[in-house]
Image 1 (cartoon, helix red, strand yellow):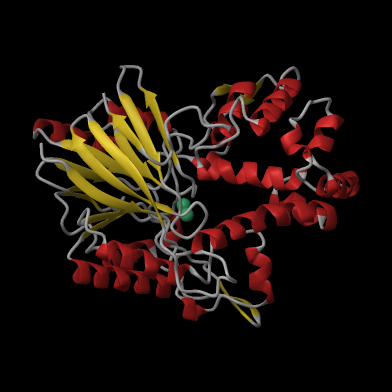
Image 2 (tube, protein in one colour):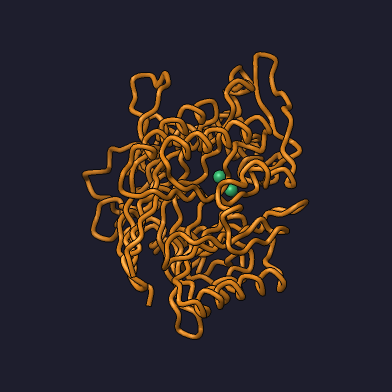
Amino acid sequence: MKPLKFYLITDTHYFRYSLGAYGEEYEEFMDGEQKCFAETQAINEAAFDYLAGADEADIVLIAGDLSFNGEKESNKAFSALLHDFKEKSGKRVYVVTAGHDFNDNPFCFDENGRGKPEGTKFTELYDLYKDFGYTDAIAFNEKHLSYVAELSEDVRLLVICNDIDGQKHITYDDEFLGWIEAQAKQAQADGKMMIAMEHYPVLPGQPILALIGDARQAEAQKLIDTLADNGVHLVFTGHMHNQSINVTETAKGNKFYDVCTGSAIGCPAYMRLVTVEDENTVDIKSIPIPDFEWDKKGMTGEEYLKAQFDRMIRTLIYRMEHDPEKFMRKVSIKPTPALKKIFPVIGRKLSKMTVGGFGRLLFIRVDPSIKKDLFVDFAVDMARSVFEGNQPYVEGTPGGDALLKLFKKIRPFVKTLKGSQGETLDFYETMKHTVGNYGIDDYNAVLKLS
Ligand SMILES: [Fe+2]
Ligand SMILES: [Fe+2]
């Protein structure tokens, strides 16, 4: 077969700037956000300018969460941007819509606080985005806004969506799984290779994310079996705004890869360049989202997005000390009078503590090179790296060794963890592989599909 190349970008979360994203309440909202908001129009314009001039491929896939939160003006403007992009570049665009693209309750901010712009109905999405995959499709599922498109003579793209009218992020039912299976079988019968795209990760991006229900497709195993046992061994996803590449095997011994890409408008902001070399070999490369026009306070685009990510984590730690009730609400802990007294004490101690001091408290020997580092800085970097992928806290590094000693201390008390889909996970292994990447490179990798 002829090799095929395409770009993939996801979670563009385009927000029409003129709706309003400023003011005191806006800043308070942004204290708890990983992604940018006011800046998203500028970032998307820069990203699609780059893609228009990028000459390695003439196909762009977008894996969902196209608009910030389903504002009608944002969807209209993003659709116009994509039409313009198509015309200017001659490239083809394939999208999947997701939970953030239709909403009765979107919001914006100005000097008077929170405003309520008009939302988008699910039934309006087709008209907004029909020129980006749907009208070229060789099969179309209207209820699910799902389709099959021919990327080349040899490769088909299965776009699947389980955010439907009135419901978001639901389990794949037998009827929809039947449709998916029929498309996969048809591709096999026609001698075509098929790859898939859906918004929600099918495999947990990092092991710890298996604990969070929202971090992946509900009852994912059903979908994995349906796809992989019918010849579809690769899915491209987004949603969690993290960079990861994971693989599993079905009971029948078929491999299944999930390539999850970071959001265009939040750290880690990357897109992918994918080369399908042959039926068995797919090469994945990562490209940083280009710099964008904005008052970035002297920072590069990448530094600016990183600063927003860190702001979210630092605010959380700050609130533990100064606003424990808000802190508890954010991390879903029920505030009690006792906890309201305890968290400020913990927060105050942690904010001043060094990594060495933290180690001493738990009788853990810490390498001298990181002893004087502030514990909060260490924690922020570690939390961010779980989303950035290729986590550096592996065995044999000062930070990795300190963390592994910590997990060993906890292990006698917490042997296993319960995954959101009923799995039992080994505590130590889950933590070890969450803070350090020992598996596939999350940025650049060659995947062997069988
Ligand atoms: Fe998203
Ligand atoms: Fe999402």
